[in-house]
Every structure is written in C-alpha cells, then in structure tokens.
Length: 225
Image 1: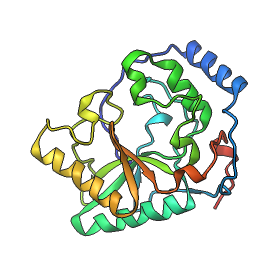
Image 2: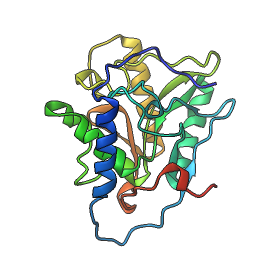
Image 3: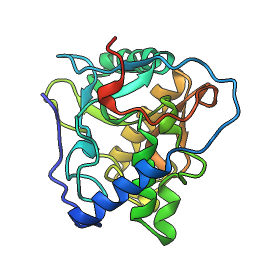
Image 4: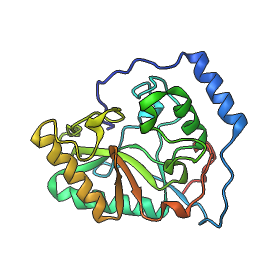
C-alpha cells in the first residue's frame, strides 16, 4: 500500500510548456565535470509489507509544479546510500514507524525542468542545473515517516516541497508533536550518516555523495538489481 496525501497543487506549467522545457533539457545535457568518480551502482528501493513505502510525488500531479515529470513511480539510490536507508528504517521499526520515500536519484533533465519552472526566492528550494543536484548523483533521498500499524503518513511541520520557512529543519512553529517527529526522523537518518538539508527537513544527503558523478539516465535504462 502506498500512502499519499490529499494536498493539491496549482500547476505552474501548462502541458505544452512542460513539453518545451523537457525538450530543452534533453538538448542541453548536464554540465561537464572533472573526475575521477566512483562507479555508479544504482539500487532500486522497492516497497515491502513492513519496509519503506513509496509516495513518488514526481510521478503524479501531487508536486510543486502540479504535473508528472517521472514516467514511473520508482526510487533508486547508490548502493551504500540504499543500504544506509534500510538501516535507518530498521532503526525506526521498534518505535512503530517506517520511512515514506518521496524521491531518490533524479535525472539531471528533471533538475533542469524544476529550475526553469520557478523564479525568485523559490529557487532557494531547487538546485541550479549548472551545478547539478545532489539527487543527480544518487545519494540523496527525500522522505518522511509513516505509522507501521495504519500506514498513515506522520504529520510534519510542513508538507513535502512546501517552499517556505516551515520546511526548515530548525523551524520552531507548528505543533510540538510534529516537530518531535521531524527531529526523530533527522536523528534516525543522522545515525546512519545522512545529513539533513538546511532548508528542507525531508532532504537527506548520504556521506560520500560527492564521490559520484551527475547522471542523466532515465529510470527505464537503469540495470535491474
């Protein structure tokens, strides 16, 4: 069972505009980098009965641009990050909690679409494609918590991808319970060598993320594991 919320977003782009941005991203391609880099070994995170669950927002219209940008609801991470993620999930299980995964590896072309879709202070919450996103390297994951017994998502101080101060991991507002759950998530991920983003409580980078190159491989072309 995949847990979703009822949040709705106003589309930032018309369907034709998204097609134009998609074509532009495909024509430009990611920035050139100097290596050497570790060999990519992307592992698919598959939902299990008591394992991490998936709520891949970018395969739906339930995201900040209001349109799907992934053709499939799948999540991939580099093998060390995937193994650390599963350890974090196991760490939370005795508390009756599990990890709810929104996103992992993100092709560079999608980062380009996100950047071109927003402007002004909203760009504080998206990566500059000229530098690439940490998601493009496969060691970053966006996630929250869910209750193992009910499958319901835990309430956090903000929604996923909410672009304001409520998303900050040190935000003092909201309910005490939501802040406690946010902090519990951060502690569990930190224990497995993930670092939370300073503006997004849901965004975690695994140690060593910089050892991997920016990738632009579609999900359909990732070898099965």
